[in-house]
Length: 305
View 1 (cartoon, rainbow, N blue to C red):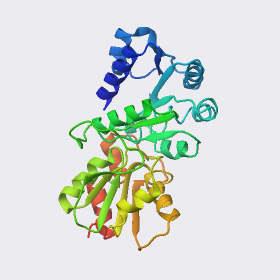
View 2 (spheres, rainbow, N blue to C red):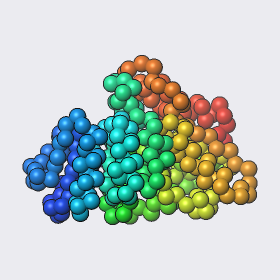
View 3 (cartoon, rainbow, N blue to C red):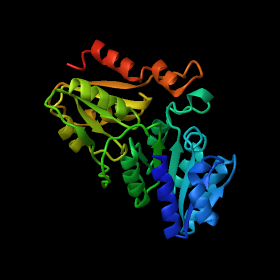
């Protein structure tokens, strides 16, 4: 996914001299091409993320286009107030790129882990949130955000191992993407890195799988139409279960008159910090998000039958 991001940014910067990419002292290799091709359009502000958002907002008000990149623990969490007042309040179409979302930087401790970015931004007006699962979803989210008149946030987790789609596609932001379809009464709705776990479960238990690369535009009527055949719905995300994909599905389903009794189980990070520093794989296991842990929980709660 990062290769897609690097190629996309360098190509857009070459096409548009008014496009600028801001970085908070991160992602050097990621930006090698853009720094060589269009060095004046890449701005490394150093360890000054709040100021970076203000710089980008000012330039967009003067007619420029801006991408703002940082680790998700800093973009958006550390700069949330600045996104709220400098960007969302004026509805500026800045694209924020939060890298290392979820548990990617587990070895660096709680300061660099980020399980609350989606829930934090969902409370702000205007901003659109994307959570791609593979390189093709990344391309689709970048295109959609680039042409959007609203602020956008693209969540970049450890999804490079996922190979879901086989070609580029235009993102339809108000609906889920059907990835695997089986004639069963249970389904999984996954976003980001957890889609790879969902597909493993689907292969073993023949469960229908949806992907949710767009999180803020989902249409309630369309969602109910997609999910109405299922008695058991499982949401999966490398994010807190409070305010993320599971909460979004719950809210949208409960807004409408439910015609049938459905069970929704949210798989995600419980409301707690990671207890020990370690590898990404260790952290996923500690939070019960690895394949074996998820499978055991679903079996215990009879969600796979």
